[in-house]
Amino acid sequence: MAVKLIASDLDGTLLTNKKELSPRTREALDLAAAQGIYLVPATGRSFGSVPEMIREYPGVEYLITANGGAVYSVSEKKRIYQCLMTPESVEVAIAVRKREKMVMEVVVDGVPYAEEAYVRDPIRYLATEYGARYIKATRTPVKDIIEFAAQHAKELDSISFVCSHEDRNRLYTSLEKEIPDIYVTSSVSNLLEMGHKDAGKGKTLLWLLDKLGISPEEAMAFGDADNDSSMLEAVKYGIAMGNATENCKKSAACVTGTNEEDGVAEAILSHIKCEI
Image (cartoon, rainbow, N blue to C red; front, side):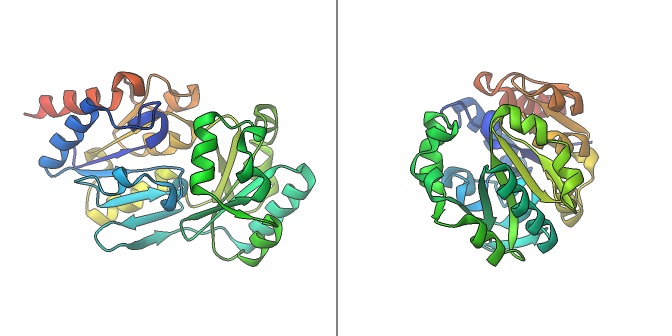
């Protein structure tokens, strides 16, 4: 079957390490859009953190954000789907934050909020230089994140814990058992991300495919991290990047080049040429 929709993660996948779209990637995306293929960014980022060049790219009508917690329509300029965390799960997550004393981020209606000290000095919390700039540019600082999360317990798209690689590995599986109605994933080594158990990129992508009348056999998806695994498993053409985690590669039908090697572009162009 011809591919009718291409979903792609952003960081480490569609974007270069400099967080840019390479000329080769633009060529592939433009060719796909010209053939009427839906281009769907699918990211762990909140809506407010998605670069403008992605939100406004020709052919992008829908965006999957917050690891599947929400879907936005570009033309309608609004959220058309959401799968919010339950107040009960937020309450237990707050208890974990108090116990573990990790930095906590929350997303409300597409806007990310984080603890004031973390936003002021992200490098102190293991952020890279790019990560520090990104955090300062996108996070709204909150003096008391625990109180803020409790006040917005019925409105949270997701919660993230900023932690060491060791703490992430220790808590990765235990949190899903401890906190009700959530799934736990990770896009980078110092981040644990939580959403509603019925969210996740894979389930939300299937919702969007059903809305558009497209079968999973007519869809292609790209990713590089654990939070992309369910999306790659959901469609026929699930493609992991050469720089992907082992879990992501195991979930994929095949592996392409790295994000620095224009892996997404090469896979798209190769597929389209086979269809012509």
